[in-house]
Amino acid sequence: MICLGIEGTAEKTGVGIVDGDGNILAMTGNQLFPEEGGIHPRMAAEHHAEWIPKLIPQAIEESGLSYEDIDMISFSQGPGLGPGLRIVATSARSLALSLKKPIIGVNHCIAHVEVGKLDTGAVNPVSLYVSGGNSQVIAHESGRYRIFGETLDIAIGNCLDHFGRETGLGHPGGPVIEKLSKQGSYIDLPYVVKGMDFSFSGLLSAALREAKKGTPIEDICFSLQETAFSMLVEVTERALSHTQKDEVMLCGGVAANSRLREMLNTMSEEHGAKFYMPEMKLCGDNGVMIAWLGLLMFREFGSMDLSQTGIIQKFR
Ligand code: KG4
Image 1: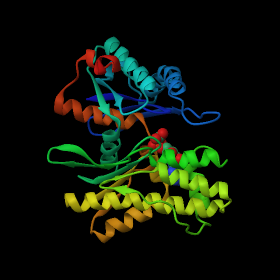
Image 2: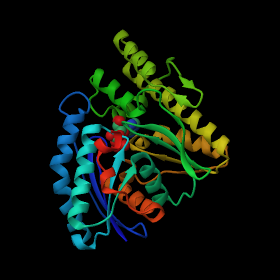
Image 3: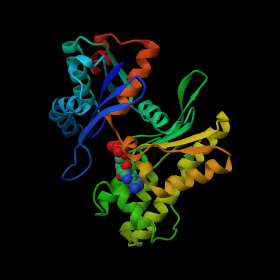
Image 4: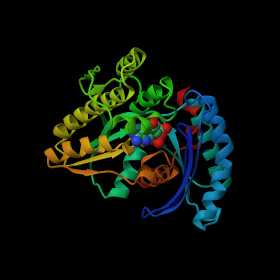
């Protein structure tokens, strides 16, 4: 069984081809870099509309296969930016119709977890999935995936990127903040964990206030990281205790941060749990994770009705 997957929940367009044993046969992608500001949903959709028709033939060529060899199509059905999701769903549906192949829409967040398991060999981890658009603690428990904790407002990556843009550090802010944080020392910022959820918007406002006051940027970057990451690690730790699992996995673009990895690794060790992180190219958004979850779901549930693939039908 060979699956072609299309990703396009945010600003990255990706196509992946995977076989039934989890071998990656092709991985193509392209990212929108906005000239200023954050990601505009309409611009992201236009980017997908431009790039999906280029990335599919590139992936076919990279795999050495022909279109007839593709057994099924999968696509990122959500969560994500609405206009882009419609382009992805329509592209996947057109391809499935023209190739006369089954189609399946998959959850983007679960795709991050499943490709992480494929890459690392983790069997049933508590996962911290942190990116520009999502921040969730996810685990498979009692027969299904459950979200144990998540952001009440913005994602951690969005918080870092917003801070970076407003303070002139550029976009994306995450990597620059990590670099500057190495020379910083601690100042107090709001730590918000409510039940099993966390919140970053108050922390962002407080960090921006400090910047306006003239507090050294290195100190704010250090404290922003320490505070936000402690919140994420606390909720992951509580989910680990609750589920009694013995594996922890970090995934999503913010997994690139070495301080977050260090903190999560230390917490995992303290609980006797093994810490995993997929290789970085599979941590960010990509088509391979969509193809792999498509295969797994097809095996379990079969394909979906073509009339279910459009966002409009879904919410009507
Ligand atoms: O998963 P991802 O590639 O895609 C989106 O969600 O769009 O994640 C991108 C996010 C951005 O917010 C970026 O600032 C963050 O990952 N990021 C980092 C680092 N490298 C990328 N955050 C903290 N530290 C880093 N070194």
